[in-house]
Image 1 (tube, one colour):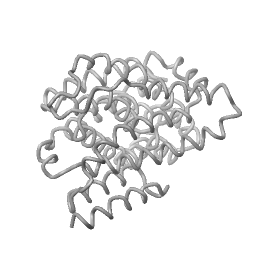
Image 2 (tube, one colour):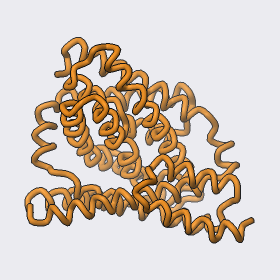
Image 3 (tube, helix red, strand yellow):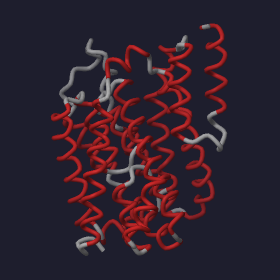
Image 4 (tube, one colour):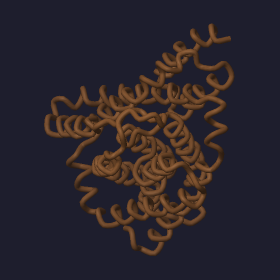
Length: 316
């Protein structure tokens, strides 16, 4: 069986480059293959994932216009800071309540607070997160993203939300930008524009949050025997900023930026497949259901709180 998997896993990784394969499907495919047939390349895939995640984050910067998202971010900086701080605080408390592993709890919380998989990809190497922490966190976020695509438009119509209100709610309560686009696209053009712009502005908070987390975790010993990878400076955050600034202030390079952004998104999908392929039966048994319970509870609290604030006119 391992001989078959030695051929099948690389072929599946290449297949994940196809635009028809999304992030959730790639992660699920990797997990299924690893559970059914095992992973004969386990040491190599583990070594590759952190580097590929960092490269993907840098490439995603090519899709950012700092002027546009900065102006939106400045307008809503008050409720953005409050909502991110609220999510980080509540996520930390829930993690302790359900006794989730601290790193898994932090990744789920950061993914909920900012922009899902991209935030997890950025923070994970900075805090020396283990492969299972990353896999479980991403899996939780992607499941909730899929639920949001179906649930949010239905709730929005039932409550009679305007397109602007729905766009704001989606941007503040749905994890990933891609799912914000998918949900708001079903609601209307204005909802799509509002939701996408606010979500991109919110994504810029990856930079200070990752730097803060890297500083807090800097005291951890390098290459310790606790199963963690060595601590890494978040160089990719600087790369993300430089890439974004280059595409913003050198308009002639923007066509190339679109290509880089698209390539980075495909590379991230392949990386998620490899992360899924690192999941073993023993790892899943060790992790349990607590991280998913934390992710669901946190998401429901954040979605309810932001919806209430929008309905009351506190966010507009």
